[in-house]
Amino acid sequence: MNYLAPSILAADFAQLGSEIRAVEEAGADWLHLDVMDGVFVPNISFGIPVIQSVRKTSRLFFDVHLMITDPIRYVEAFKKAGADGLTVHFEACPDTAAALKEIRAAGMKPAIAINPDTPVEKIRDLLPLADMVLVMSVFPGFGGQSFIPETLPRVRQLKAMLSESGLHPDIEVDGGIGTGNLQDVLDAGVNAVVAGSAVFKGDKTANVKAFRGILDKTI
Ligand code: DX5
Ligand code: ZN
Image (tube, rainbow, N blue to C red; front, side, top):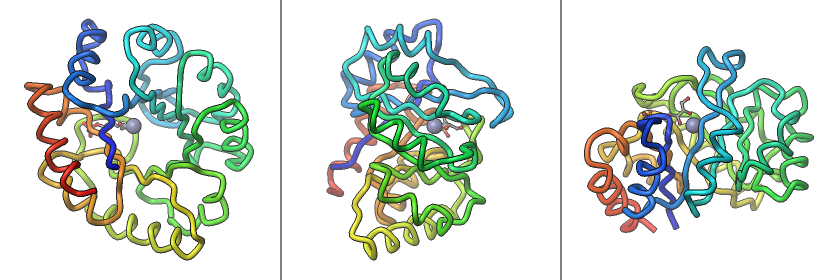
């Protein structure tokens, strides 16, 4: 199963409830929520109260991407706000293993993210603790950036490392994904796709359906 996770960073925040309803009804699987602290990344987005509010309007799996320093401090708070999965950055954690364990203990799906310039090899020992690996396909901080093509060999390298270890976490990419490069990331081994601009700009229903068409023929 391939998952589509629209990122609300590209949505109209004044109409957040109806924007989410539109992508949910059109066939999105997850909702991707980008939390930024202005320290780990050079931008500030939204946080716990926003997630708490939108939780009441949606049944989608909440895929919360924490671009914050030392995220272990907030695991409980995001659980309470309604997160289903919590992604922490390897580069942002003093102890990534502890953060992943804490997320699992809190009853959420633990995921580890790596920036485009972090060698995949660095997370080898952490893989058994993660239910998902997010290979960033842009430098985190902003929506609407261009896909970094070197992501594809990095996903293939991760895939090889995982099969050597007999592990099968989800593999997600985030940044610069559209229907034009979707097949390439799926072919590399990705099964969860984040898309902000390519879903929320223009006709959301048509955009989700275009993604679905490609995602569902590659199972
Ligand atoms: C970037 C965020 C992404 C972003 C993707 O830091 O993690 O989730 O919203 O946006 P697009 O799909 O527009 O590149
Ligand atoms: Zn994200």
